[in-house]
Amino acid sequence: AQVVEPGSGERRPQRPVATAAPTMAGTGAGYDLSVTTFSPDGRVFQVEYAGKAVENSGTAVAICCKDGVIFAVEKFLLSKMLVPGTNKRIFPVSRKSGMAAAGMSADSRQLVTRARSEAHQYMSSYGEEIPSGLLAERLGLFVHAYTLYGSIRPFGCAVLLGCVDKDTKTPTLFCVEPQGMVYKYKGTAVGKGKQAAKTEIEKLFLNLGDDLTCEKALVHVAKILHKVHDEKDKEFELEASWISPASNYEFSAVPSEKLKAAEAEAKRMIEAEEQDD
Image 1 (cartoon, rainbow, N blue to C red):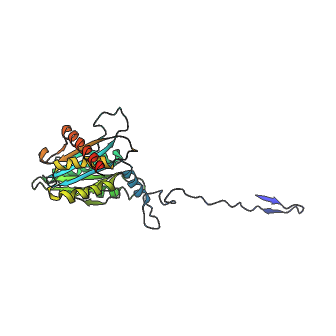
Image 2: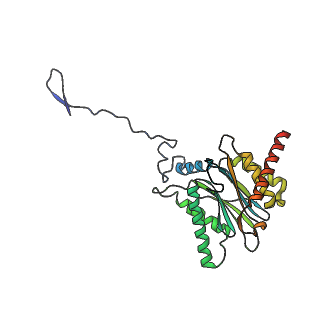
């Protein structure tokens, strides 16, 4: 486009109007738009945001006892019309292994399906149960693969994988995080109240140590979840499963009578502690 100079009749090119450069909103300042992009300080924001999805969910706890593994989760009641036991967050993987999840439930079910597939393929190929460490590592590799491609997103969940060896009856516990990292624990927690729950688990091991059985731990995990529950959140349903002598060393949900008794005892213990304070 051209403009005419006043009084001269000459035409000259019109100068382009400068426009502001587009700005990108968000915490990552443009580095959080793809899981394939590193920020200048070496962070992958999409994976960190997946971790935030885990921290926004109810707490999940797992403890490796001397005679097995116990899982417990804080399952928020999103509606008063929900049927008890629905929307499970603890799943069997094989007869001797199970998994508790925190984060997006739909994502965690995909990981459960993958873990079951790995366990089944190993059994079909070698005629024996897959070693717990190998299953955890394979699951970690699967989760990590979803942090490498721009066309997919990371899993918004963390899982606690517990197993008991068929022959030695040795229990093991692993945590698989959204970035694909795999850690082996004696006891740990994921979800909203994980820090407080981990502190309580450490105290439990200091007090009971090698004498901690699944039967004893049941009351304590119920106590931990009630203690770390935020009063601002909705009411929750306690879900618990174990691989222990009581279940013939096979994955099984804790019987409802035992769970109710443990929950009542946990509440009594919390009230007694509050009165002492």
